[in-house]
Length: 548
Image (cartoon, rainbow, N blue to C red):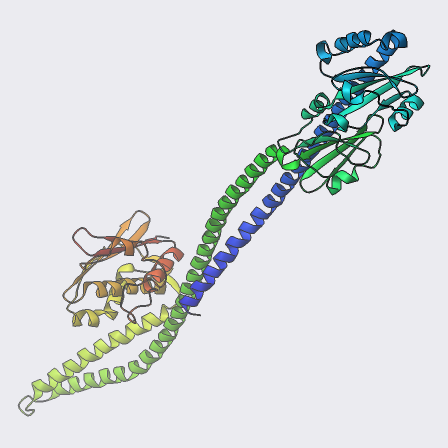
């Protein structure tokens, strides 16, 4: 899998984790919020129902009290005065004036005294001319008042062309009927205080569904919910639709139905404010959860990426170690194979040298040339032997922990790179502390780290450069400083220099694992490695290892 595909996988994983954290955190809050909103709405609707019931019962009591008051007042007049007194126009006029005085002014429009034969005996009011000589003997209301003793009519206009209703009573002996016309305007005013909210309504219907008082909202016909309330029922009945709550209560001996309408939205202002606060809170919490989810998922994915990088670096390092082990075994085999002919060459060169010592100089023309050739053969055989000796030492140190002399290890490592340094005219300035003790550690790992650091220094200085190698002891640790006089390292590069696969070299000239492996080796061996730019120019790497 290439880096681009891995990057896409990390992005998908981060999005998945963010969505998972966000959903798992916000869904319970949304459920709780919805439950709270629903419960508060139900409580608000219950409050509306309680209020509507109370208003209906209060208005019912007020209207019944008003009607009973009028009936009782007429009954009092009948009990106080005889027929002969009432039928005298002057006396009836005085009673009418007395009735419409004080708090009851305007309640009664007229008074009419009717005999049991249906003929008018006396009248006081504004409609004398219109009712003069009327006979009520066959009128249903006249028959009902004689049968029941009391009669309250529906609201009607009649010849007066003004909405009103009539209350009629007869005396216990049924000798006459006293009839009063009640001002429906005053009666209607009793309903205005029953309006609940600006969209509410209150009115009275008779059993046929006809309006006895005008609708406060100017309604001219009943809807299905209002019609459903027209059946006779005891107590207060409540129904509702999507917009309104309806309360119905029968009054006036089940002749009239009081209807109270409450527009639900008018009474839910507190609920709407509560709902908006809840929604705002949930949105704010959702935004906070989104930020937290993104941060947590990003942190987790970053740790996973770092773990993947470290694992990749470790795999690369293990492969490198295995390769070095194979190289070590190969070097040992080559060294053994080369040592045998080198020893034979050395022996034969020595034998030739002994033979030349016995020769007569006058007889051998090129004796000195032979001796010089033998000396060169011995010199190069010794040099080849030194190289094979180093190869054998290198092969023995692969993946082994032993006593290491840092100075010797440095010199051996530098010897591997002398040819490259000489080709670029790069000088090594060695400042080695000869009093350094031996160090019990994994020499091969230390040598690999030193080799990487010196190779980086060679790449940094370029031709004609200088590399300072300094060893020292400080307390309970040894330090190796490898510094170059190159251009130094930019600050943004310093922050990423230890990351796996990070490199500033051209494509194909570096894997970006060298310094990452050095850092890993240093920490595994219990030490540290640092880098800084030198004031005089160039970069300085310092490897510190603990003495054990």
